[in-house]
Length: 357
Ligand SMILES: [Fe+2]
Image (cartoon, rainbow, N blue to C red):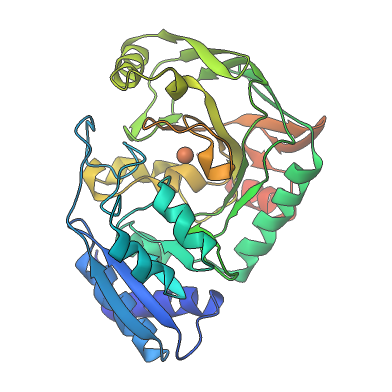
């Protein structure tokens, strides 16, 4: 069932309070044709009620000519803000941008953040936002995981299905996604709850075997038969399997870009309120799959750009792949074992589900 405006306003106020919104600050809500009307009106109402000066900037939609879907993360780099200097100026002059459109992976987003403006992306359906409204605890947990990544020089990922991947670390920072923006120039995404980094350029090697139930995004499909991806010197060199492997290969080939096959961000999910089974309930076009990216203990890796972390690779193609039941070790120390995060919350979560069908 839908959620009420009151519930969504409460959620917005929690996010805006955690984001340290002050009375008198300027909030610009960035919208386009796909913006959810309830999310928009509740965002404006909540920010206004907290004393902010609230603008709405509505831009005409753009779907890149090669995009095969309307998923806003299916084709990166081109947004309704591209080349729009007046709109960029308005956003840079704001204290906080509520991105109800999707600027992620665009150069314009970097320019706006460099002005000190905070950007919070929020495009999932209202009931998903309410279920996954962030907490201070989310920030603490994700931050602790990011410190472990920052201190490590290698991530080693294994699974019973046959995954054995080693990624050298150290060239790129760890990124914390905990769902709110409490520092100037910070970007985040509500909902989220995961940690990630990028492997050193050209230093990922091994094999990833996607097992039944792993997820392909932006397709929003559960894998039904194994897909094997061979990785050498930072790039996926072979993709083998059945129909889903063929579909993945063919989709990626439409971008005609060798950089699409580079290993992109790597990390793991830390959000017990995000659910692996969520994709089975929603029409693909109503969401972008944040439950899939954030669910507790998933190993989330991807192919595509590294410019979000300060790297030089840009490519329009981006494939996110959340995997279940993987083990992740940093310099030999396990942080996730068979999909169970090795901290108090992760162990309690696994214990609560133990013995269930
Ligand atoms: Fe991604």
